Length: 253
Image (tube, rainbow, N blue to C red; front, side, top):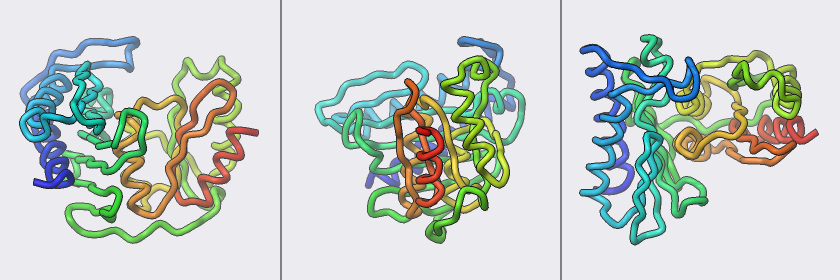
């Protein structure tokens, strides 16, 4: 089984497991705040993915949002987000997914990404040498458009507002876009960018499991996915190449 086929099965099965558990009822726990939550479904879905990876790719390393940190004999690393958008998931909002990415090393660019959104039954796949697809159908390559003509996805947490090094760059990029959307799942946002549904994305200090699966899809769609440093933060930028260039200029201004 090749890596892309394996990744597709992992995210579909993890997403379907989480959806079944939500239907049957879940216990919820807070991590750091009322909006930073985790459930038994997060842990069960990660266990499913990790168990299968240990069987199918025993020499690869695995890093999971819910605590998995397995070293491997190879440099390759699988990044696992069993339920991305847990607050939406537990609130029964439709914007959540299961996501995985494969990278050649812990700090390398993604080789592939797989994202499954159970509420819409959409499976997104793509990577180096593998054009992005939705449910097996290839998607059109992204075309360059200015930021002022496209929608921008981002996330603005209340704790961000007092910090000018976060607030000011975010306000600049938001003011430069045609419109702004906050969906609550970074991977779903990036899949939507790869599909041309959203125009661009900016997130500050994303974690690898939130960034790499969707970044792989955007790159596979002919777009840009870059991380730039400014004012003490890492800014994760994705979209068509022209919009990303404009975003980079705005966050570093």
